[in-house]
Length: 514
Image (cartoon, rainbow, N blue to C red; front, side, top):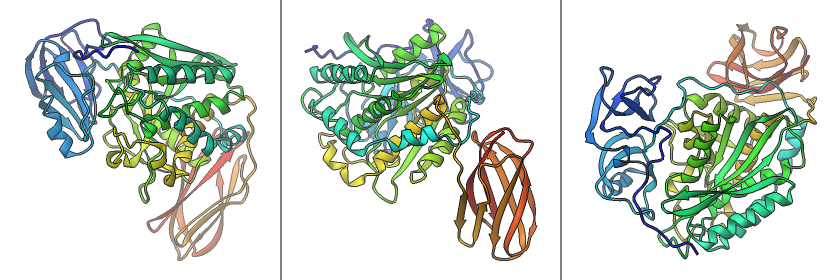
């Protein structure tokens, strides 16, 4: 048993320079660090900086802090969390659910409040200001469909129940160590190269579990699917079952490894379970910082954190991605639409940094979080009632959440045994319908559309990154009409095809082949 140590947050900055000065905003999302200040938070239309104010600053938030670790980044569940956050200190900045708090005393590592979602160190972020490219060119892939079909609800429940059985997985307990060892052994049983990676956190040893599946074409380029393995509750040492938070995400990562290890991929895939997330993202920060320092080519990160709580009508995935990760977020949306159409999704605005994806934002990588939309109202969050039995009624929501993430990573990693399926695509919404007469298509698409009355109709094609690539618009007679759309200028791949008429829209998937 490791002895619990309650120390102040240490500074986990990617910069070796410790600056003293002010906390202030700059009204320019593209702003980067200078010799005078570093960027500590990127909002939707501005950044927050720490250091010496420049002529570009818009608003001074706080002055005369000796170090950045005088502050904490806090994510709240609701406005009551704002009040609870004042136990830590003065709130000097807020954007949505995100606060920056100037600490009034050293912070205990087991700080748990019902409406405070996450407390983490304030660190430098060197995320790029423009969206990072996501390499994706293919259409519908039979191998990915097979992988998605192999995701087992029983397996997800069984793995999560096993993680729950350790009673607590708080990062300094034997329960967490045992969960790491079990996970590592399971990765190894799938034939993966897996290792427990140690790092120091708040005075004690902690660990991540990292399993590698080496790509056959681009082995030095990596896609990551991940989730944190540790848990927390008001009773950290004895009763923190953490079924949803985050046995669920960890089980999905394990399920991805079980299935995907049976296939070969062009790119390498890392399956990672993080430690120290509940104390402030320590495990992922250590990994992302080391990867950035080493120049590791990480193409994108899909992070899963709480995916089992889905009461209707809000049984949806909430996607969190920053500006640099826009292409990854849009690809996730499109790919999951294709392979897991039953899962509805919503995009968080603004996104939160309260999980391990943000460690990769800080290191300049594309990363995103997929989380249950109702996480903010989950009554079992950080409680001893966070047990598997309380989520069984919501399936297959959790299975679909896992399928969407696995589909995305599998599709982006490019299975070697890939194939394009012949299938017809049709969609109806209200009184408007559209059907592709043949799919895939080569240079010309025959589209049978039906509208109730004569009027202007628009057909728009988007690529898988969400970029509009072609449009067609003219007045169409009411009833059924066969339209020929020239797509010879488009590259082979998968495209979203959208028909819009009188405020109604329908979408189908078009696959263009050579």
